Length: 161
Image (cartoon, rainbow, N blue to C red; front, side, top):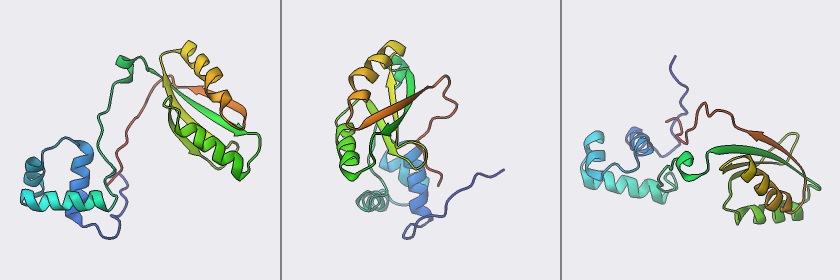
């Protein structure tokens, strides 16, 4: 079964999409190798990559680190319910989350709770410390529910192109 692939956004052609696919698979690919794969000159490919970056299709580049080697092997998701759902509470919570490096992701969600937080810690003792010193001290937190990950079945940041 062929995977569902979204249509390219307006303004992108097949070459742009291929460049994005290749860069997403290997952000360290050289411009020369990228040009060979695309069958364009290195100058033309470089200009396309610059445009894709300028137009916001490419947000940046980063190394994917091994959390198990860096004392962060336990992934935890935390549902957060706020005491009030008012603009000032949302803004205070959002600002507090932004400055906490322990919080890897935080998403406001629709449904039975307000935010979903993703974090990584060494073990359950480290998680308990994080909850007490960081999560429960965030502005407006009334209730949390924790989900410790037992197995990562799939972990990717790649978008289907």
